[in-house]
Length: 253
Image (tube, rainbow, N blue to C red; front, top):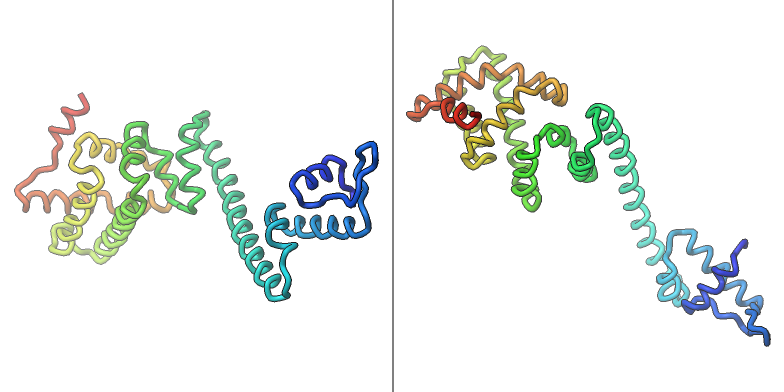
């Protein structure tokens, strides 16, 4: 069975496998029954059971029903581990691609990317484009409010798709439909920034940096930039407002 002396000593110490007798010199002597128990321990250990489980649960079961329940539980746990490791593998590959594209070592940015990758979030490319200020705001705002962040992201996607549909149908950006869409877009921006003009500036810079976006989203956003911009201008005029260009310029000085 290729078991080391140290392993046998550890099993003895943990109360898993106590030798039947000891020599006067202190050497452990194992009987045939001990060897059978060792074989049982190693067999269940190979199925992913911990030594504690083997000691406290596995070797104490008396009925086939109990053993079956235990095996089913272990099977589910292994399936979850396999799923988790597949995601880890996918994340490793994706992170490797991102490291190549970033062309510089930034472990803080790597860590920011790893978390959404582990959650299977395909929008991690957004985070890698955030500067430090926007990243700090994002983490403070959404680390404990993941669902809120998802709502804003989904709203953005829905508005983009709707804008593309209206544009392709030839509907004017000053139409009632486009104005209603612009109101949702503006509300989404205000919800994300909480009215902070500095963050609005950051979002505008982010929008101008499409060469590093996910290609599909970049193409969609480019298609509706002018359309949604005109719709927002019209919406703000109706509300008696103007796009805060002057304030943004002052913030950039």
